[in-house]
Image (cartoon, rainbow, N blue to C red; front, side, top):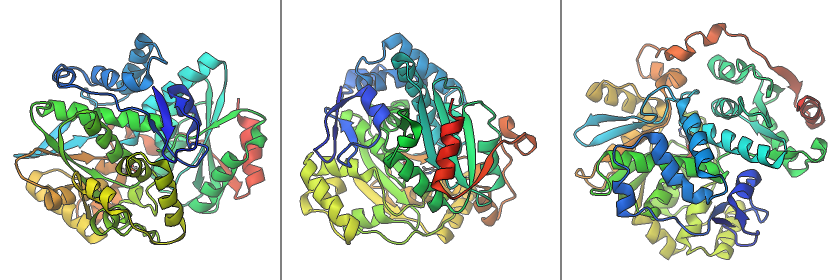
Length: 462
Ligand SMILES: *Cc1c(COP(=O)(O)O)cnc(C)c1O
């Protein structure tokens, strides 16, 4: 399998190169050159298989033989053995035809574990094969750093450095990162805000001289392997509800659009999907674009669903590439204009997107209302991200007959603040995390100065 850039100018790469590369040299994102086919027979044969086996079958064409089948099976099996539910991502039926797909049974209680548990292991495999080591650097405002750390803690060939703003993340969030005491995990509390931390990571990727030739790898959601891992649960959940013999719909709490784009890839491969509903919080660029063709940036709003607080949806570019008939030059022109001024999609691409995608935006007051309403009707306590999806699914679904699968992207205990605001007592942490507040922590505090941070990384990598 070859991968090509959404902006049409960068060289095509293999799977191995794409996983190690991140962003394309022309500023675009990599997508597979052809979409593997999931035939009616392929899908029908998945009924009753384990999640790990479905994962192997769905992802194998994307890996394209660059990891031998038995090794890849082992990687997949190990990645999903870290989940605390035997079904890995269980379906929970809310009412006659609305289901929650619980993606939060991984080590850090949010759906990013599904992709990062796999990505860390794939990176480690390729690095071992090449006899290389690599450094991962990332910045987090609180919720996503821990998933990257958990994904890499067992990797022999990777050192991971995660920057978070000192005293500006919650205690539970900090401890999910700093209580991982592995030798290759380094937490850096920056005396500054999230933007300072992110700027230093960006600058380090732009000029990697401080690492003397060691590769710096990005594990953010533009990495193709993360999308690939997420395609699997769309297929597995649809098959569990009767695909390929009947279609389903999905509602996806969205920010950078990586999650819902993975669903779109499953659809393009042949999975029968009637509708995708894109749910957003008050940071509604995706909803404004799909509903009103207003493709423009707005100022960031801090919401009760913080993992969906974004200004720009990086992975939306991958969908635009498809909507524009894979015309990289048109995508590049559109996104260059978008960077400097409010813009709009051309009519034909927008119309094609609207055939499959609906959208709905949910403000903070409505998130609280949705948490209460879902509890009243189903006894479930939803996390605030999942609550945007629950509300959007009820409001924007095309019909009542097609099963609706809303993606539950986080465990409510991880975002207890919103749950308490909605009027519930706190949600206890699951058993494997009960003693989190007593565990030993390890992190360093550094000033928001690029040279200090880079010196620390260069000296501590193994
Ligand atoms: C990252 C995240 C999202 C948004 O996912 P995207 O792939 O960026 O659209 C939604 N909910 C939770 C809990 C998340 O961590």
